[in-house]
Length: 319
Image (cartoon, rainbow, N blue to C red; front, side):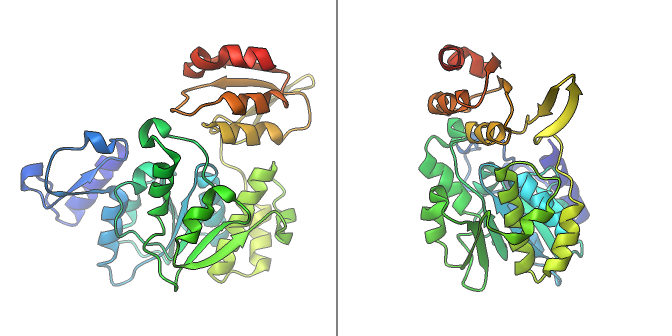
């Protein structure tokens, strides 16, 4: 897809020959391919993220890299950081990281999924942001331990000269943060500058803003600049996005909530009566307890798609 095309084009630009696996020095894999489906070869197999990072290390001028990962909020935090710092973003947000090889940007923010990190070995951002860790993609990673291990690859190579930024009192990530050798900096909803994020809705979104604020401070941005940029930030589409109002009913699109924790955070962001439309794949996650929690916040749930086949009866019993 997009990643393969970007790798091929960059290789052509750099006069790196793309050849058959048998003649290759390294193999670049798409993040969509599970480990067990990779070709049987003794050649090193790495991700596009890892490949781009290695190429950047050969540049005379290298960008300061800010890596962002977690189960939920990655894209939002990546866009918030880029907005404050007026810098480009790449990675899972939709722009291949490799596109920026050879370009002269002082700072680059990279959103990283567990799929992209799976085949990373040397990747090492100056600042790593770990947001949270809740059940997701277990159809691929199988266990939360393995899922967390993939996220850990973002900052496992960091030294004491680099920084990891993480939410205060977030128990799900503590085992991984404790393993980090880098400087540790936490953030919370107690951040005074959150009052300036006038277009952000919900505690989870404000916590994302707190992460971005602390990244900006870490690279030397003053609070006056952060306040100015906060007031002009607009959330990305499909994230508690207002669609329309009919009579007294508001229609909100939060289709980027693709796992149970994100869905819970979305319904908790509203005080009024909620009619929830729930669809999509379960991705190997057990939704039972989450549905019981969601049922306390909504009047009705309309199911369709893969999740309907598994959980309609539970939802009907609790709503």
